[in-house]
Image (tube, rainbow, N blue to C red; front, side):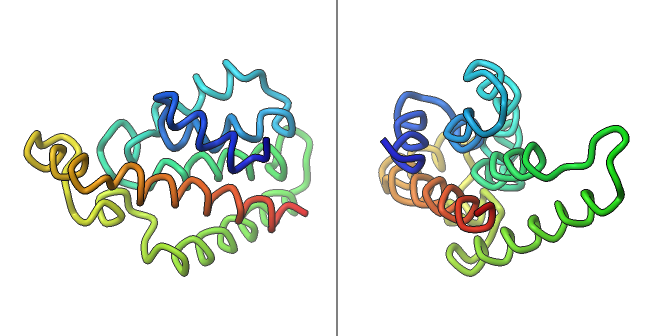
Length: 146
């Protein structure tokens, strides 16, 4: 099973977008599956269902940070490289999806409003939009971390 398939499996198993992306990279991250799922849990639904930055994007940012991020005793160059990769990711994700904002990606519908949530389900936006964002995030990460 490739990373895209793993990420979609997590999502269909009721994990959020952020969890799905980070956990798909668990081997490369050096973290356990449970740690990946726990660390990224609060980022789902645009950070705790506030619908800010898409969870697939925040999961991808965690992957980039774990791979390239500056730690103790690292040079400032590592941080700058991480920021460069981040900008590259955002640019490509926006090109593919038009936004990195969860609410915008869900056609302006509010996850916390019962009527809007029903529309999200009825329009299959979790299946159509969220799964696409997850796959796009994984693909972009794979492309820029080669």
